[in-house]
Image (cartoon, rainbow, N blue to C red; front, side):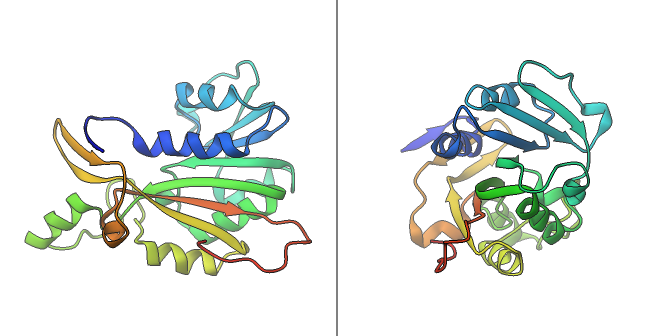
Length: 217
């Protein structure tokens, strides 16, 4: 289906995935937790949310079942107990992190066996960016607040170096955006996934009995 809209399809898809795993007993960690409305939406389905925010000035006040902590994703295990978290959510954060491999491995440390992390991030070669670069030159990083952006292959290389043995990378929507105009197709054809707007990455910390795992399956 074609949409002409500013809808946050990446967040909509993340929440859809989140609901598959969250329970009323879940302890959830949200990284980059400065958007109160989004945190509140996550909090409706779980027992407790710990919101980690790097920028102290963006740190909201605690409310209901949400507790905020000022901290750095790269050092999660310094202030989050090992194997204490059921689900981690990080929307558009990994592209800001200097040491992305260390950050990914910190998720492995603090997740319980059977836990899942749900991340999303812009595609470095999304359709609009690819068209612009065809006529100009490839964007250099760091750019604005982004240390880097990722192609699917970049993510595969990163995750294959990490402690996680099972993950899934999904392309999210494909479209054009510029100024007030946003045109998206919500189904990404396999042949065009390299031009998707975003990637969603699910990272699974499997239990001791899980032996044969298939990456990106």
